[in-house]
Length: 65
Image (cartoon, rainbow, N blue to C red; front, side):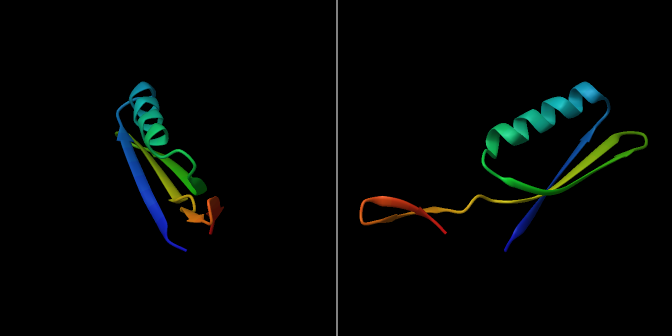
């Protein structure tokens, strides 16, 4: 299983929301494994996720592995 990480750094909640919305729009179907948020001079939000299983064509049907 391969896990990927996405980190968004933002100066305020509105900027963080925009970055997260963009990430999720571009990565539909992912399975989130873990999230973490920390505050300091900026907001740092980390997502660990797995890509959805690739679909493969088998005899005219779609199968997920």
